[in-house]
Amino acid sequence: MESIEQIELFQGRAPEERRPTARGPTSAEGAGRGPDAPLASRLRPRDFDAFVGQREVVATLRALAESGHLPSIVLWGPPGSGKTTLAAIVAAATGSRLVALSAVTAGVADLRRVVTQAREARRGGLRTVLFIDELHRFNRAQQDAILPHVEDGTLTLIGATTENPSFEVISPLLSRSRIFRLEPLSRDDLETLVRRGLDELGTSIEEDALEALLRGARGDARVALNALESASALGEGGITLDAVRQALQEPHLLYDRVGDMHYDLASALIKSVRGSDPDAAVYWLARMLEAGEEPDFVARRLVILAAEDVGLADPAALPVAVAAQQAAHFVGMPEALFPLTEAAIYLARAPKSNSTLRAYHAAREAIRETGNLPVPLHLRNAVTALGRELGYGREYRYPHDDPEGRVEQPYLPEGLEGRRFYEPGPRDRPTAG
Image 1: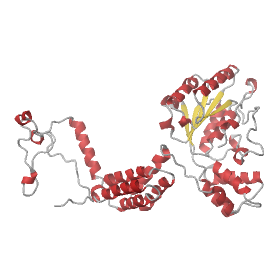
Image 2 (image 1 turned 90 degrees about the vertical axis):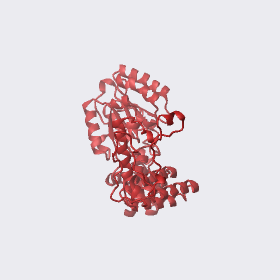
Image 3 (image 1 turned 180 degrees about the horizontal axis):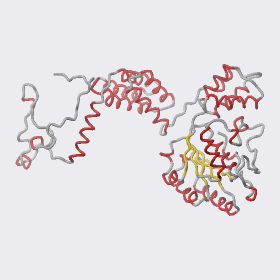
Image 4 (image 1 turned 30 degrees about the vertical axis):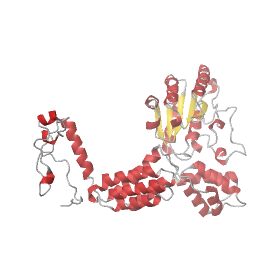
């Protein structure tokens, strides 16, 4: 993304002229739109009518802008889905002054400066919209610094984030904001933008090249337009498939090892193995590894799956998963993909049982119901004279003294005698003997 500071920073009319409008004249109007600017900047829409995609979100934002009541907003979505552009359009449509900061580089001192300027503008009847890109990168203290000025109306916040705001934005700020979820652009929306780009560049594109470009962009408008511009510069005449492939190079896989995508892909891997789909299991495993996930994290999930979801239906699954974890840790990437893939396929194909999980949950519920029941005397360890005097271990019967190796005696505390926690699943393998 080009620097947000290059977008219109002051988009308001003078107070006596201010009214909802698609474009507020400013001294910075047209910044970033010159002939030498990137194609994505030159095509940046200035009003809701020109914006492509996110139809439901756009309709709501338009209604809010037209009503004159603009709450603080958090735009949550993947790169290239229009968060920055929508912030500029909303500010312009409400005749507001737009100030933009990047959470990567801005600090509390920058926020104080913005607040001081916003107070001055407010005395002149001009509202200030503070756009913070990558809001999730602000720590709690920085977010706390914004809160009182949002509460008293000095600032209207528009935050942009690729991460789930429920986890990354403090609750007081979140409760005073409306959350809008943006999705990757559809194929048709991307094609609309690409065709606008072709008109701007004055060139054409071969049909197979267009399909490759739309597929490679993965719903990201910025990737599509940047690749289109690069492909156009690679040769004379129309854009070819080879030019698009060179422009796209290695496709970028959206991923964040501590964010939503991390947990979404892990969840997909887990559910695919649990659902006995080896093809989906390998796909999600590869998605994680190719995006840079730590193989140790993947291995841990497979070990957990072996015990939780395969369990006693195939007791060999746990040694397979543990061996894969040890092998992956020993050899590292890229060779770690071999034991991890083997384990994922094995676990997906294995019969499934969650009887161990159900047994533990049942035991936990009994503990919550009955509390700290005393250990029966015969099960206590008689290591001291006082313990022996109190009867610790006195009536305990040693199972190995029995020809069958089994002794029927109480093992549960008083009050839980005969309670069943483990119920064999229909696919549990019987133990030896």
